[in-house]
View 1 (cartoon, rainbow, N blue to C red):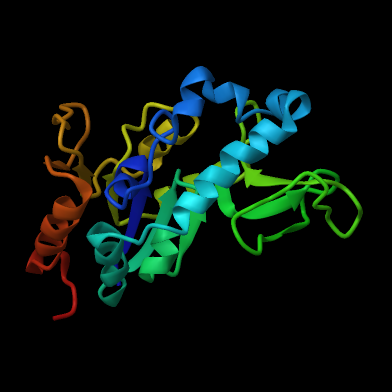
View 2 (view 1 turned 180 degrees about the vertical axis):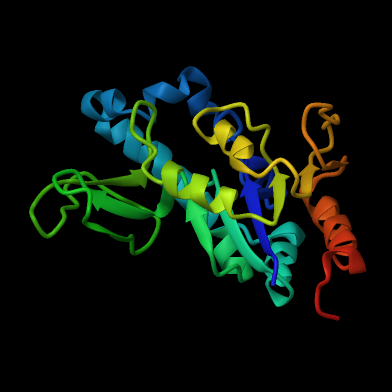
Amino acid sequence: MKKIVVLSGAGISAESGIKTFRDADGLWNNYRIEEVASPAAWARHPQLVLDFYNMRRKQLYEVEPNAAHFGLAKMEEDFDVEIVTQNVDDLHERAGSTNVLHLHGEIKKVRSTLDPDIVFTLDGWELKLGDLCPKGSQLRPHIVWFGEEVSNIMVAGTIVRNADILVVIGTSLQVYPAAGLFHHAHQDIPKFLIDPNAEPDPYVRNLSVIRENATVGVQQLLEQLRSTKYEVRS
């Protein structure tokens, strides 16, 4: 069974109604993302940081996976699928994908500020000052903030290197270190880029561009992958 590796980003969740930083609420128009998503922000204004992530977490409970998420989950019927996502939502998992690596953390989870290995799923959407881990330290969002190490990046690189087929969807791959993952793939494997504004890159071998949003693009991808060229089960 061929291994498909999917690199996913914000574009796939946007079609479920996940709002961006600027769209989330008028309040956030007065802040740069670093002011609510960095260790320095947490040290200065922990309540502001908690408010920001509580809003995002609450919103996540109000949306559902879309056809693109379900389409990627359906691929597991014919392929060994691994998803490496820059998203912190759980829409891939809720759609049925069973092998998802989160580069930037998971918004429904919280962790200890004393021991980063103490991580668990929050009960509900609201994290408050005074919510403590078993060791007595304040809990924080289980998110990789600006200035923090992306601990899963080496694991992600290994996953991409083992791909037989690489799919990029919903991300411009302009932000490092995630942007470097594309170049870990073997140059001769089939690669698919799903993006309504994408252009072919003459320097990338075997790249097929699907100029559609995620929901339409994943359906077109499924149709291409079902061809005999990829030797999938009927």
